[in-house]
Length: 109
Image (tube, rainbow, N blue to C red; front, side):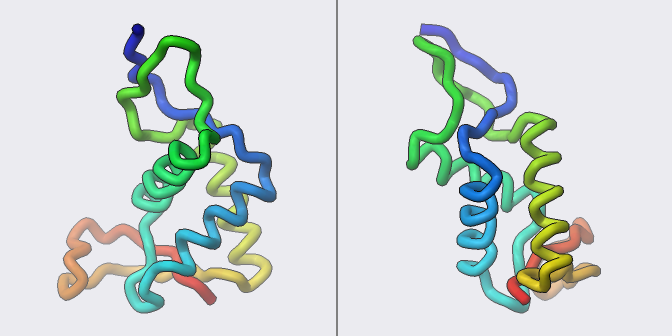
């Protein structure tokens, strides 16, 4: 058995990935939203549950980070969802929310 620390590749087509993104965002509090990093992590977890993560034979994935190409796909779909008024980008930070790093968050429209 081999261990692979390479970033994760998803087996979702764009429509399936869009549905998973919306599912994650819709499940979040509308005043808090979700950061890009957390969204990617949640999508990976769903992908593992649905057997939609590309795993070479006899390999255990040890990384929980999306591959750069997958991050681009998620970003492109997020901007499409923003353009179509399905979600919006919540700018800024709030110490009350425990988000001291100033990351912007995606929220259901």
